[in-house]
Length: 534
Image (cartoon, rainbow, N blue to C red):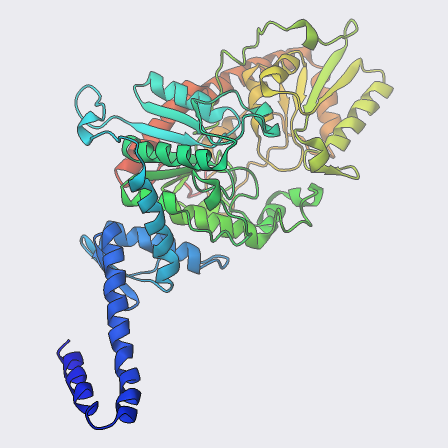
């Protein structure tokens, strides 16, 4: 500052001796003044949000605040495959220093969002108003955001039975096509009028940031409560300003993966199970590619404290030991909704001849996921196996289902003698889980192997599903349809397994353990990644 004052005095002196000289020097002198004023302005902007200061390209301040800015900077400036978020230069106790390359792109959206929340007229509760559990301590709380089929809905309900403040929130139009897969929500924030929609989201967020200690979401590219902040590019470098604000306020972020491509390169899946050659999206990089899959995985693990991979193989970002939970965590079903003794409405009662056996197979969005007989679930091979069995005199028929509402499809599933899920990926999904909960024998390709040195997943190991591929499904079905006693044993084992691992109450108990670990600063699960089990 003393040096700048000296320069100003000299410049003022020179103006008396020549306007040309003073004009030239003035331009040189004003540059550092302008930069200084800009630096002061940016410091004020930064301090309005955090306890941190900007010094050139560096930010120094409270480690928690610096960490949030570090995460945001990593998202907007590192959309490269495989890049991480470790940009902190120095950390000493509660103080840290980080580098920010594009301060304006990072801070301006955060400031604008903060101002919008402050202007919200919603009366937010004081800390003293937060309910406490018996024995003291802050009540466990979680907001499940976006629909994960019906899983979040039933899990939130089960957590409330354990004394939690747990809410399943949906921001979608309730009339969208995929709503057929949902079973309900606790709050729907959609409004057809855009300004009112935004206002409802802002008001709800303003309450949620004080009410919930964790936000757990679902959906590739939708890391936000606000559609305006969803990713539109395969680089997944959109700034989730609301989630960054949550992190600044100490709210933990959780995520449930969508499917095989979520954080895993297409080439990695293909090497592990060979599934991609059966998938219509193999040659559609706008949907699935190494670069975009890994870019989304990088963003998820940059922002999240807990990532539920649902027992998926530990490949690429799904092998991140700091954040991944490999246990059965959020794939939660209500065992009363999926009961083996369901009463069947007349409209869904299947007709069968005496002694006829029914094999059930379904593909949601079949037209979208199939082309020229190519289908990730192996539907063509299942059709061929059934036709071959029928030609050999087996009293069997295939019940193929697509786009039947989830609330209703269980009435068809429960009447099947065998349910066939997918024959190519290597792990099971919602259809197999529903079949097991209904006490049905389930056939599905199960590739239980992990990469060298990685332990297998305990609940995947214990799963009673009968493994089959497109090549072996005929033999597997023939053996299973020929053995009524085995089908009966598998039916019981399937129900027992599903209740133990996927009932909403069992998932709630595990979710609570993972939540408590995250709140203590620990990885969400102690289920090992290695050494390999024997």
